Image (tube, rainbow over all chains, first blue to last red):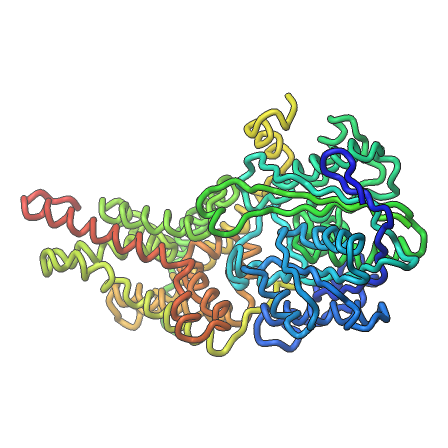
Length: 333
Length: 128
Length: 154
């Protein structure tokens, strides 16, 4: 493990993503990526009484599924990194309380999944054989905590994004032949003064830009090195802004850039306005779609940049702007 | 069904147009500003109370009937009308009792039906 | 102008990039749904009047019936669809006030019937009552002052 430039870590023995799992809710199951997910739920409660319990169950089952698919005995998983959007990360800590694996709860808003993968990769390189990373979000519990009751008859603004219901989990190992995590670039907190909690994509795009440029500078790579550059949940507006701003800085990412929030829903049919968001967005799209693409060698090099808006409902009521973060990992076959 | 015979269509059209226009003002506020629904409701009820207190809203009610009383400005008008009536009847104490007395039916109904709805119904996700 | 030069430049840039709501369509829907709700209110009012009830009681009956309909539709998970379509058309009439009380009641049912439903019922509509009632008291007090000095306000 060595440090490149200012913010990037390069692995000498790149950790392997051995196996992944993804479970999504009913709306995602009607989206364009439905066939790639391991399991699609029929209703948002999944037999539970509350959405919070349902979200805990989703992350718990996703983690169990990832462990089972990997064939690694759960006793051999040494550490678990997980997080979500609810206050004090209750979905992951409640969902994984019976896992019996040392647990490191993390919060990076919607960037949690990549933050987990990055920390897990560092653990693998330094001491552990197998670690687990997971993240989840739930549309209903997120609306309840951040916005309005579900039954309130309001109109969502055109710039708003739809929180993905779902969870993604990944098992990282020292050895194997899956996709490798070769570089990670941790991002800085960037705040360009956007206050509108209904326009997260615009708030987070500068953070994604900062991390993207930093990654290219640190590694000496150019955008064309990657088959795909994927951001977590910038949505349509954030995607357009990032593409333009990157071009402005001399990085043309137009041809190989996409966003998980844009990919997971059908904008016209599903009426999700600016696209998907939430921890689950990047986690399920990577675990469902990109991991399979990598394994089938359809794409070989991917830069995954998960973005997060580091605010809560109190800060937005107090009129604070939205500090944002983006972490990038380079995954190669 | 005697009421059917004395339907006053002019009255209904006045009511429809006035009520619709008040809602359009609200819609413009929603689309052009970043106000939340709660703030918009507050603006309407406060405006209605002030216009009611100044005696202006009464003309709109006389003109449009339910077109002016059903929107939340009408709720505010009702509060103001009640407070003034309370003062006329009971003096100082009426300022405190009048408004709520006049709108007690609506407030109680909303609380009661809200509680009933929560007993029998569960929120569901918007599926489109 | 480079968008990232200052926060203000970026805000202006974002405003240009963000799509506007379809305001004409929204206003049209708000107009006819809002008008229709008021007209239903007027019809109820006329029925009540034809039974010989006083103006005030008729108004109260209209409010209660519209609130009951709104609560019923909210409970059936239908009101949010109407609200999505009509926007202010269903928010501004008394139906929106009822919906803003019923929807948090249902939402916070999972936290129990006392502190969940009872405690959170007014999270959205509470300010309406606070500002409405406070303003009405001020109106009453002002009226009282002018009235005792024999100057009529209304």
